[in-house]
Length: 387
Image 1: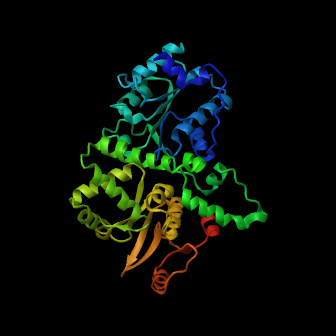
Image 2 (image 1 turned 90 degrees about the horizontal axis):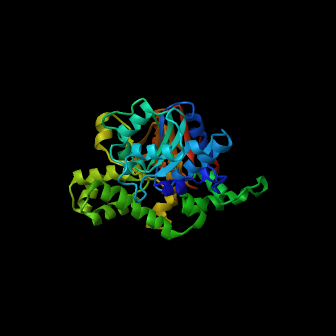
Image 3 (image 1 turned 135 degrees about the vertical axis):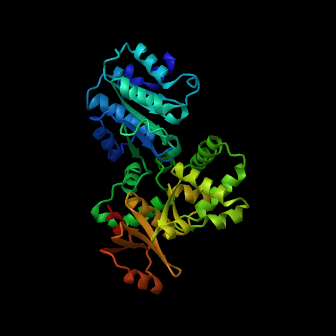
């Protein structure tokens, strides 16, 4: 085990300078968490950059905060050979290797926390008994569900999203001068096609994105939930990608797949838990919200394009707008067969049109709805102005 730990923690033996592109907004959130004892969970879609973020933060702890490297421990819990050890046993072995006393402050990074059974109780033990700041990652919401509420009041969650447009330009090493503003649209079209999975942005290797999809479907859904109908799950995924930015009727999908509505509903939840899709409800009273289909958005538009091809740029643009506002209270408006994309907090009405205009019926509905503010996002400039 000692040799494995040294491989995971090169900063124990040499100066650590990781050659990764920084994602400052997430590093800032980690820095802001340092003064609390909370266990920090870094979540999000597979390969969105969680492991890279951890290693970049390790470098900052050493350089910016001058933490002695031997007080920093990183381990990937899905590594073959570690499956027979508990988290507590792994940490105890680390303390022995580095001759760290029980009272000294340590910084623990636990990648892929879901690979350890009963990790919640173990993390609670660490929180209660050790002088430790713990950071843990997971690609599944279901893994982080603390059914016994062991970590309630002891945790904070940071959701890491794929690259936004500004980060995309950074990863592509593109700097647009004010005099070259006319280039903005072509680069944005490229972003709409590639999406924001960091490694895919750098390589544009389609096989990479296909492997990512396979990992989510097989490891995070089929294996994790013990599903036998593998082909049905994959067909369900294709239908999700086809319906991005549209209403998704569970009843209709159950008929298409030839399975029960309860099965479809369960699969829908599984995909949501992996951050591959994000649903929003129809605006209205409780009965309307429950009975009406949800609109769905994909976790990364590059994944959708790898499956369906680059078409329906309007839906892709709407998906990107959604991620700008996803943490707000959002629903969609649907009346008499006419839809308005977003109603935020019951105050801001928003319609998304990529280089298009609303038709007459939409315009009439848009004008008739009472709202404090009404916005039409119909250009890259208006998209970039969203906060």
